[in-house]
Each structure stands twice: as C-alpha cells, then as structure tokens.
Image 1 (tube, rainbow, N blue to C red):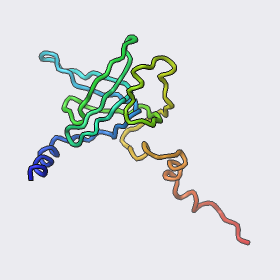
Image 2 (cartoon, rainbow, N blue to C red):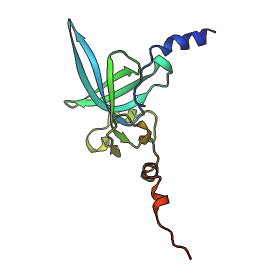
Image 3 (cartoon, rainbow, N blue to C red):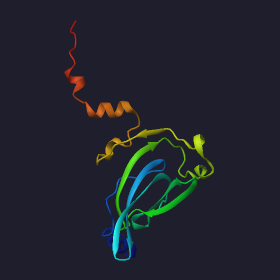
Image 4 (cartoon, one colour):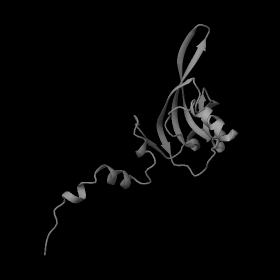
Amino acid sequence: MTHALIKHVQKQHLRNHPEIRTGYTVRIHQKIKEGAKERVQLFEGLVIKVNSGHGIDKTFTVRKIVSGIGVEKIFPFNSGTIQKIEVLKIAKVRRAKLYFMRDRAGKSARLKETHVNILGDMSLLHAEKPEEMAAEETPMAAEETPTEEV
C-alpha cells in the first residue's frame, strides 16, 4: 500500500521532458534566482550519465569544458528549476556511463555524432537506421510505383 501511495504522490510532480540518453548533447534552460531577480541560464554539454532512478528520483549528469576545465552538473529530471531541455546531437555510444570522457581532451574526446533538430517529434530519435526513418516517412511510395505485368 505504501508503494502505491508514494507513486500517487510522485505522479503529481512528474514533468514532460524529451527522453535523455547517454551520449546526447543537450541544452538545459535552468531558472536561477538571485535575490529578487530571476533569470534563465543555459548549460550545454554531453550527457555522461543517466541515473537509473525512477519517478522523481531520476537524475542525469551533463559535462562541458569551460576555459579548459571540465564542469559537470547533476540535474534532477523533474526539477522545477528546469524550464526546457533541448537535444542538439546524438552520439553513438556503447556504454551506459561515459566516465572515460573525463580523461580525454581535444580530438580524442570526439564521438561519432548526428545533428538533430527536434521540436517535439521524439519518434525519429531512436530509429536504428536511416532507412527506417525514410520508410516511416513515405509509406505510400511503394504503392504508387508502377509494376509491369507479364
């Protein structure tokens, strides 16, 4: 009973953000409060870790290089301070945690990336191959092609 009660209470605080995976380059719009003023600060970097928590406990770690120094920030998925999350690039990675990126700099820190322009359609994000995306976009193309009869 307590598990169901906790889920019910947490459901009220869940937010709708795009799916974030390790290897994505994201731009996070975060509200910062300084005294009486409130502003939006951007943090753009590579997602090196997605915590396996569920509900409001889920977090992700973003890393960027500022003036030659690596800076990492841990963001809760359902934080009230996060206004918007944009997915900019998707890199092909084979690991769940990219801690090895901390030791890399320059050309060795590059990942094989795909630039993405997502404005809400998240279904195209996780297509395995470009052919799958093309097939999903034009299902009528196969029916319209003329066939020869013998």
